[in-house]
Length: 179
Image (cartoon, rainbow, N blue to C red; front, side, top):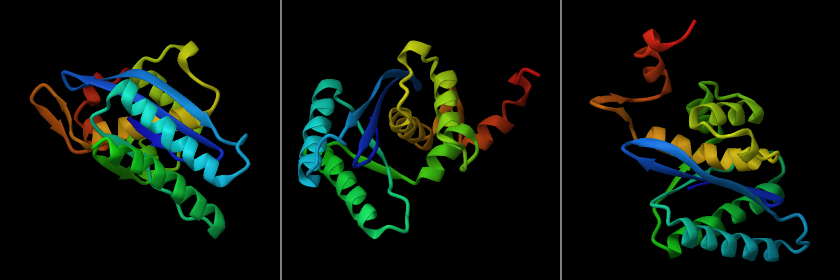
């Protein structure tokens, strides 16, 4: 399970890994802007993450680490949102793995500065997600990207091959690239 934390919109994505192959299960968003009180938002995040864990029974949680911004108050609120999501996972004994936004983008697109739209496009291609399952809120695909990044960071294996990262995978599979 992957989460893109936020105080206005929080995205999540669920992958299934069978025979070391990831497949898309679900993604979505928690709309938090309608809650005026920050503490109500935190309560909603906690209860929704618990609900997702109870519904999908993930083995691990990958979460995007907050990036450093100029607004300290925004950073504090974002950190609280991330912490509450992590507390929900901890309460269900789910191991947590944090990834920087640049690391997630690099894992999915090969470019740490990729736009959110590029990440969503690559996820759709990699995981064979039908157009109708793609959501307009890019927070959802960002949550799914955290989950796929974690799968890649856990060690990409195909048969007896093990890849250390995306560049290694691409470099060793040049013969399979269509020109």
